[in-house]
Every structure is written in structure tokens, then in C-alpha cells.
Length: 574
Image 1 (cartoon, rainbow, N blue to C red):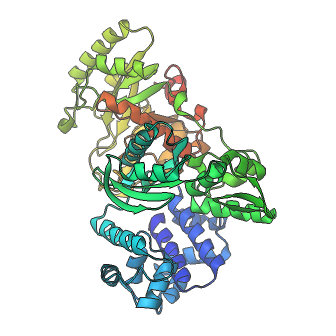
Image 2: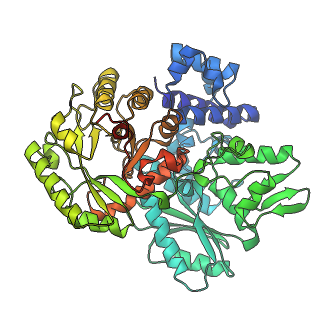
Image 3: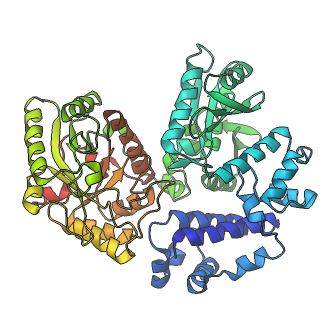
């Protein structure tokens, strides 16, 4: 029974109640519970056993009973009641981008649409565009949403979205005087690990000219919408990202950026706070009566509500507003704080560059240290290093270091954790290395107890400094192992072993929720680019984004030290 499964049930319940136009408070409450459960680091079943479900944000006695009911029976009676009278196909309709519960209810009432096939047929026959709040472009977007849902490419990786945004921003900023400000908004600005559409916000003297240049840029594969102040295009690439641009007035930029950055849950909480103080907040500003008291800069909005500016990465309604109000927001780690990279592969195993080339690229990035952590011998598909080759590599790294004055190359290994929890290299050799990161590369389908025992055994090993990509997931390609992550975190807290934030955009592992749990237990995090080519060293910034979403400060991240400081070695255990 996973947290995600139960979260999906509460999200469905919220959708069905909104579809039926029932209690709006209940709808918001169930949506919040769904978000909390999906992002929850601990196993909800364990919390139920401890009787601490009601300690979760937004979970009251009635909701806790529904969670317990599902854990015991696999059912939620209230959800089954909500499903009554609703066509089975409505759930799929609600999954189409651009179709929320209210719009789905209107389509059902006006046209009897109760399935995606019926929705597609109505859109192709142009029967949607004359309905309230619809139109030709909405009709086209719904058809596109159906294509996306059927192709399974609804969301893109963070790096793909960043590249698409950079391509558009570079083009528009390259037109002198066209835009005075332009920045990402939405989930991209919050650095979610996957992104739906890329949202951009711009300011300029001639909105029509900005829209025209945006929709005619060399990156455009298709124009979905071109209005006076907003437009949507599909850009070249694989997948084909959708980029939405909105042009706003300079004196409304701050409020618009805050509004369109979201998240929706954060904004709802913020609006509630403003309402309690007799204010209103929207994309046009913060108002007291008819007087607009803040709008030009985001910071002005938060300051007027007696709080510091909340970093975009934290805006998920996970306690950040409360922390801002009582002055306890974390001082988040910054990309400029990074002094080293703990996970890089060279051409000794499956990397593309020599150790010398990696050292030079690391120096150019301003790093003070970089760890060469090639695979160990059992990973033959990656040309894993035998004991003899590891020792030869150590000697080469020593030679390289003698030629360097402002960078230290660390001799390391990404050593494989075998099925029985033992390591792929002998202890005496591991002791010679500057850094040892241990990882699972086989046996992904093993039972939860076995996977957990393997990783805990690695954390308890005296020569293991870091557990690499702990959950083993590949975003959109492979689910995480069936792992008890809280138990692994407790083991790392006990042994002084660090956990990796793997910055590869296919991994972004450890997740932000578990980073926050690790920090609470005093576990240090080590960011690794997992670079297999020098161009990928830049990906460490994606790891910093995960760290920021996980509420991590500079001292929580080992990469921020000018020299490598590994907790276990500092304690004299290795």
C-alpha cells in the first residue's frame, strides 16, 4: 500500500465532489490531503499504526478515519458514494490537460460527454467552441491534451523544460529593446522534477511585438494560441514542449509572477491569509479595499503580509507560509555555494573524458574538488574497474594532483552493493580511496526487506561515505525500488554516512521530501552530477534545486566545503 495510491483516492474524491458541485471546503480539504500524502516521506501505514495521522497538515479526525479505512479494507466508502451517478469515463476526461472538474461537469450537462472518446468526437465536430468559457483555441488545446495523454508524454523532465525556456528567452532577449524582463514561472520556476507546460512571464513596451516575435521564432513547431498579451507554441524537440508566454504591465510584474509561479495550494493559503487581514490578492496585485498596496515586485507582496520572500522552490503549501510568518524559513543552499562534485565518471569506465579533461572542466566551473567515481568490476556493462585497475587509477590521480594547485581530484569508486549486502571491492582497497559511494545496480525487483537490508549494510560499512541514487528510480522509465527509505535514513544518521542527491535529470534522487527528512535527523547530503561527460558537470545545479526544495541549507550539503569533509572519516571510522 503506497502513499501515492491513497493520495490518488483523495484526489479522485475531490474531483468527484467538485464535478458534482458539492461542498467547496471539502474539495479543497481533500486536495490538500492528497498533496500531503503524495509528498509524504514516511509510510502512511506506519503513521496509522502509531496513531499520528492527525499530526499531518490538513488531516483531521474524519480524514484520518478514511485513511485508516482504506488501509484496512482497500476502500473508502465516501469515495464509492461520490462515484455513484458519475460515468466511469469521467475519470479519464478529468485526466486531460485543460479539463478540470467544473469544465467536465459543464461538458456532461450540455453535451452528455462522459468519456474521452466522446470528448474527442465533440471537439473534432467543433461542438465545444460555442459553450461558455470555451472557444476555438480551447477546443484545439483539448485535442492536443488528448493526444498527449494517449502518447504518455504529458510531462517533461526538468532539464528539457529548462532548455526550452532558455531557447525562447535567449531569442527574445536577443531582440534589442523588445523585453525589459522575462522569466520562467509555474512549476519550472519551482523546479519540480517534471513539468507540464513551460510558463514564461515578460514585460515590454509593445506586447503585440513580443507576441509576434515569440510565435515566429526559429524554435516554433506549431502555434496554438496568439492573443494580444498571451500566446502558446509548441517548440521543436523530443518531446515537443509547449511554451506559454504572458506579457504583463511592469507595475503588475511582481504580483503576476507570484500568482503564476504557484503552486495552486500555496496561493490558496496565501489568499486565505490576505482575506483574514481584510485584503485581496490576485495576479494584478495585493489590495486593501480598492487601494492596490503591492504589485511591482514579488517581495512587496510577501512583505505586505508580514513575511520574508518565500523562495519559489518552497511554495508547495508544506509549511513554508507558517515558517515565513514566524521567521523560521531556511537560508537555502545556493548554486554559488557548491565547491565540489562527488560523483563523476571518466573514460576508465563508461565516461567519455580523461581524468585530466575532467579536472580542467571542474576548474573552469570554479570547483575546488572533483571525485572520480568509476564503476567497480561487477558492472561489466559499464567497463567496471578490477582491483588492479583501481590501483592504477589511484596512481594516475596522484600524478594529476601533483600538477594542480587550485583543485583536488579525489580517487573514488561507485562500488556495487551485491545481493547479500557485501561490496564489490575488498576492504583494504576501499580504505585507500578518498571517497567511496555505494550503489545498487542489480536485483531491482527484490523484496522490500532485502533491498533495505542491502542498503543499510552498505551504510554500516566503515569505508562507505555516501549511498548513491538511493531509491534507484529513473523518472518516467523505472519506479523506485521497494525500499524503506526512512529506515535507510535512520541507518545513515546512526553511522555518519551521507546520502546522495543524484543530479542526473533522469534520477533527481534523493527526492526533496526525503531530503527534508534526512536533514531533520542530522544526515548530510552529497550532490553528485553523475556526469559521464564534462558537459554534464553543469547538471549539479539540478541537484541544488532538489536540495532547495528539500529545505536544505549550506551546512546540510557536503559540496559546500572548500575541501571534502566526509562525516564518517572526520569521526575517524575509516
